[in-house]
Image (tube, rainbow, N blue to C red; front, side, top):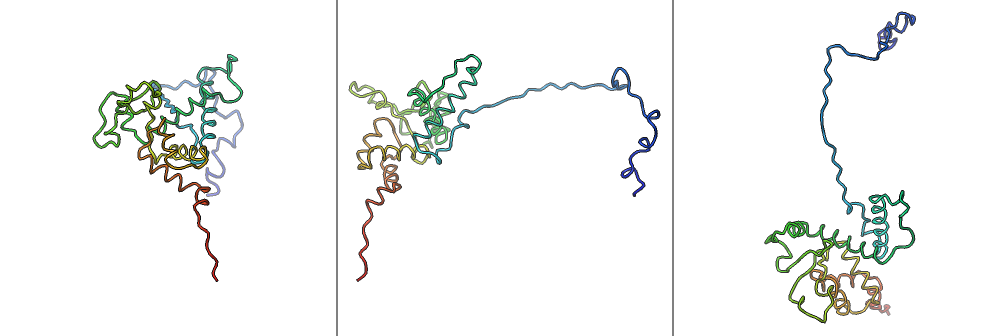
Length: 232
């Protein structure tokens, strides 16, 4: 209706200001109104792993450098280093690269072995359906899952070889790791790469993982290619 309130507004608007309602001087005081105060809590959950970069997008070393800068930024926020003038700047240090690598070890293990990591943190035995039930995993001081065995009694072997890091071959970070060391060793044979990785890592079915990396490598595929004889 063109003459309705929706078009012309209330009748009050057509009157002079002297007929408008007056506001109370002491503010609005509702009569017979009881205000209800509800209590509550606001929770904030922060997961550092959620800020890590996507391993499918970057190479192994670039992934570690990006993560190192991310961890440095998070640490600066927590300690308020910006205000105190203690903020660390400059290139990434060796210690930061090692911390970044440990962060990715834990991230990949939590993605691939969530039940096993939870059981180890709670001191419970591994489930019977676990892929690691035949191994003897343990957590180190940083929370990284490592393999423990009788080789601990050896005196001529380094600690990282005694306690290698357990990784899943299907995890994107593990694939980046194997591809990186495959290229770092100049595309050598699979056994040479296996012996090198075995010093620090226990990748489940490692030989199959190395073979897949060998097949993914474009240079190795070009070297294996056979020339096609032209038709006569």
